[in-house]
Length: 104
Image (cartoon, rainbow, N blue to C red):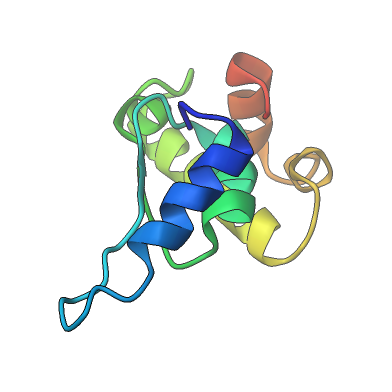
């Protein structure tokens, strides 16, 4: 998220508002997204979003497959209401991702 949380929320609310007959928009989190940022993006934008995470998947220290697993594990931890750090204790791909990139 480039802007501050309040600014992003305001834009998100505006874009999801009444567009007088036009279809609503679908928020997309993109650009520099890695597993450590997933929870914050979901907190701000809700869980009905697209997370485009090219570098956050392909840049994982153990490769693309581990990056995809780490991203999924980050989503799972958020959806289950668990902290990413606790979830990473039993999910090696996620652990390596947050060691590499950190968290929000």
